[in-house]
Every structure is written in C-alpha cells, then in structure tokens.
Length: 538
Image (cartoon, rainbow, N blue to C red; front, side, top):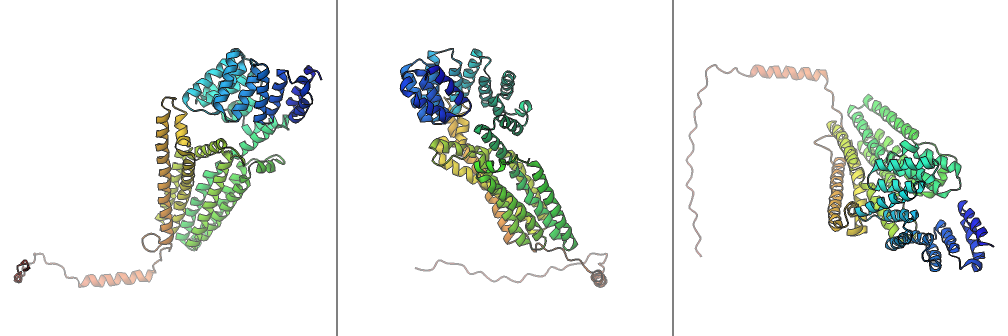
C-alpha cells in the first residue's frame, strides 16, 4: 500500500478511536515502510492513544533513529516518557525538539505541560507559563494552546488570566472538548461555559463513544457528593438537641419532640433528594462501576440518617440507648464521607506504580486538609448544641461531643497515616510548600511544611480525643448529680404546709433587744507544760 494512502487511513482510524485496527494495518505494512520515519510516528501515535507508553517510546525512538531532527518523533518520545513518570528524560527530549525547531509550537506547548505534570518549585510554574505563552505567540489560532495557558495560569493562582485564556480559546472553537472540560477545574469557569455536568452531558450526546467524557462526567458527579459530608455532620447533633429538650419536658413534651424530630429528618431527606439531580438512564450503573466505593458511601449515609432519626426518638425515653444508636449513626455518616473523599482522590488501580500511590495519598491529604476553617466553624456550632444539651441537664450531650470527635479524628488519623507513608520529603504538607517556593529555598520550605503538618495533625488529634473523652464521660457518668430526669412538680398542699411550719418557727424566735448584749470572755484553761524533746542517748 502506498504510504500516502496508508497515512490517510491510519489518521482516519485514530480520529474515530479505532487504534487497534490502525496498529494491525501498520503491522501489515511494516516490511514495506519500516525505513520511513513518518511510519514510526504513526505507530507511536497509535500506542499513545491506547496508553501503551513503553511501546510508544520504542516506536518514537525508531523514528528518531531514522530522522534525529524530526520534531514530531521527538514530541511523541517526550509524551511517552512523561506518561511513564520519567520527567527529566521527557524534559530533555522536548528541549532537544525546541533546539532543533525553535518555531515549532508543539515543542513549547509540551514543555509547559511536562513541567506542570510534576511541579517541584515555583520556578516550574513560571517556566510553564512562559513556554505556553510563547507557543500562543507562534500559533495564536490553536485552541489547544489556550487550554494549556488556562491550566498554567490557574497553577499560578491567576484566576483572571485563566478565565481570559479560556474565553479566548472558546472564541476560536466554541465546541473544543479540551477547553470545555478544563473549565471544570478553573475557578468560576462555569460562568463562561455553564454548569460542568450540563456541559459534559452535551459533549457526550455529540460524542457518545468518547471514554474520557464519560470518565469526566462520573468524576464530576462524585465530586458533588462531598457536599453531604458537612450536612450529615450537623444533622445528628441537631436531632440530639431535640431529643434532649423532649426528654427534659417529659410526657406530652416528649411526644412533641418526636414529632419535631420526624419533621426535621423528613425535611433533611427531601433536601438531599432534591439536591441530587437525576442521572440519565444507565449512568448510575456506569458510575458505580467506575467508583466501587460510591454505592457503599450512599448506603452508609442512608444508614446514618436512619440510625440518627430512630436514636433521637428513642433518646426521649431511654437516653443511654438513644445515645448509642445516634453515635452509630455518626460513625456511619463519617464512613460514607471518607469513602467519597477517597473516590474523589482517584484511587490507583491494582498494580499501579509507586508514583501513582504517592499522588493518591497526596490528593487524599489535600482533600482532608482543605476547608479547615469551615470544619472549625462547624465544630463550634456543635459545641453550642452541646451547651444546649448540658443546660437541660441531659446526658444526650454525649452525641454532639461524639460527633465533634468523629469529625476531627477521621481526618487527623488519615493525615497522620499518609504523613508516615509518604515520609519527610513527599508528604502533602512539605510538597505544598515546596512547590510554592523557589528551588533555592526548597529544603527550608519542606522543613516548615513538615513542622506545620505535624502541628495541623496534632490539633485535630488533640481536640478530637478531648471531645471523645467528654462524650464517653457523659455517656457513663453524666453531669453533676441526677441527669436525664425531668423536675418533679410540687403539690400545692405541700407548699401550704411548709409555709405554716415556717410561720410557727418564726414566732418562737425572740426579737433581739435594742441594747447590745454584754458577752463575757471565758477564761482559758492552763496549758500543760510541753516536755522538752531531747536527743536520745546513743
């Protein structure tokens, strides 16, 4: 087959996602075109599409052996090396492309993307931004470059510039998949492209066989489930307050409290159901298959809702039993939140290399550490609920205390485990400060990151253990005297009898004279002599 015709067919197969057929066709024509550099470039491109990085590297090197100055072959080699987490080799390969072809825009584009794939200092951010902006100057009509520029600007926390690049790229190609998908990771990107879930649905309807779009849609759906963590963290303590008030009131008040608990629980369930948008047919099973912990997390939330509601109703009459059931509900909801967080971090597949394991732990740590002040505010709200329970002298105060303990200990223990597994140089706190500092100050930044990380973890563990001890103490012993018993009302006849006795006693008390009495000072008895204490003879 003539190479021009072969090139056209292979390009068509790659465009429609038939890489396997393209590789089979290339193998059939291997003997005829194995001396053509472009043949190996096509071979490498097919393997890159199939995520067969080692095979893509071999094909790219074969093309470079035939034509060392070929920029496309060097680009394929750099991409294959980057995907194998061989960053330094990938940077060397792409720099050789730029030295050979300084005006080759893709060389500068991939220099930026490879640098951003593993940021090690703030210098990397600056280099990536400069490289991608140079690529735009070389080819201002390429929307791929604007996508890369938006990512590089967002990495520098320059959200305004990122939105500008995003908008400029969409003006060139309004349906560019890369730009529309990248908008989901850029702050306020929905103001330009709309809600990310709707955008991805539209893209899937136009390209239903695109696996990347389905994965993005599933990730977007799972990311939305994180909102339930804070909701359930407050839900159980609120029900505990209602149970404490009902238990204190007793009788009809307890029945009214149970009605209030049922109403609050019903409204909470309706709110969550309304917030969760319905999925298209078949999508639920697809998402569950991609994220196996998600169905378990949703079941845990439902179990937590059921246990908290039933425990609060039970606590109006049997406080200890109600406390235990509600605390089980707290643990169930915290477990569901943990599973959703782990799925959001993108757990590596079985057999993944150490680099993927490290990135997963760093992402988990980042998600746990994010929103500290929101977590602190929610903990303070629960302490207020704890105070309300204590003011009513109810042992159910153990529930808000236990909720605070669970909400602080879960991230604290997870962060500590990740800190130990990642070590001094690779943990999230050290990495976070290192990548925001210059290469010169990297070691000092890592030291500060480790110290700050241990302090952050210590705060969670100390406060969590303190709250856990308070919860256990309230559950076992209660607070000052008799708890959980409503005040006994006095009978009116008892009050009148007490009043008559008090009047009779007052009549017997003599009125003091107007003149002060003279008091005689009694004489003190003679004190006996105190014998001297001598040192005994030896």
